[in-house]
Image 1 (cartoon, rainbow, N blue to C red):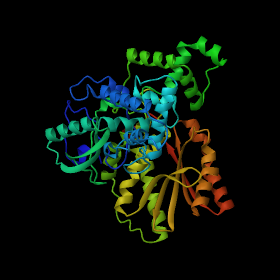
Image 2: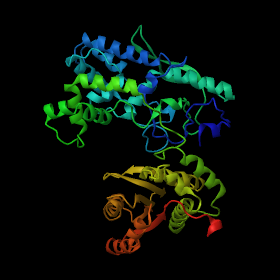
Image 3: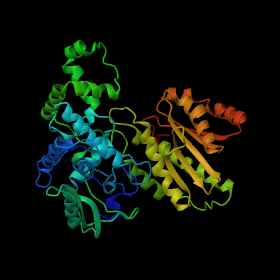
Image 4: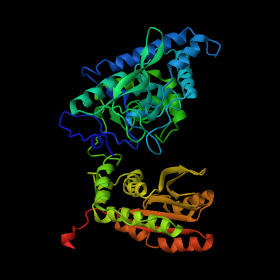
Length: 475
């Protein structure tokens, strides 16, 4: 459920905060560049404060030795500790709320990158997220965690204002790394009043929607696009590249390190052109709106009398909830969640999130475990149903236009079952056109051959997600 649902909030036009899904992180991130553009009373100085924080780090590094025997180096490591801020319910978590964050090893990467920057003649950051242009390991989740930690004090005050406005119950809870003490160069915790997430008993911290994106504005891919479009002649001369191609991240980092002025030009370009936050309403990647429609559907389509006792009961349960998922997409306009306004379908992840939204409620009601993207040693299977030690079903979902569609059935799912020492699997094909439906028309025949050859118990489902289906009144 969302924050507003749990706390019975009716939003108005002034409520511009992101309404988090409290049981599962949403794969959006705080973009520090959007924070840089903020002009409001609460966040207007936040970005300058983050730059001051890193300037101090550069000053300490400049008079430190890069080894653990140097007290200032160890101080830098503590200073650059950025744990995952699970309270904002954003990020890459595979299940529930809670992601990777920044442990000691990542602190060292940040500190070492500062030393490397100094060696390159850089004495500060224009935008601290440019650290991701010069170093591996700085994805959008890391940048977001760093930003959330650096502006946590402001985010907490922002949350408290919203709670006061809507009469949301709060409790006193200890928040680690509430703010950085510039006098003593250390992070300090504080007890504050915040709403509590009923699913994990942690605090809830709200974030303005205007700060959220799928990727940071300053990122290696867009940097390379800018360079190719605006510095084509220089690129040809220095790197003998005639075709843009898809360079590895390590190659882009090398180019950025060798051409600091190119980075400055790119950042100046972004200052002029600006950047836009993720549109929650249009939800082009299908990351968020699934929660509203799937909750409404499961309330209206309860599954009764499903006592899961025997192995057969468990298998019947899995097929029942998968059939409900198919019914939702094909007959309850669920397929509309898979299409954008430009008549292009969304990514495979959008289908997976809808599947999760439909079946998780049934699983909870029947004491069935559902895990998403379980890593079985040969990559993650999309979903795993389990009840006890022996009853398991693995689910693999593939869009029919995926170049590895048949590989998903004949190699991936089979390998996952082998690793799991299990024979029960379901392969779901999602089709967006009549051509795709025709291309997979023989899927059950292939499944039958696999089962006969391997002794597996694989079942297939084909979903017709073609657009503009006729309404029931026209059938």
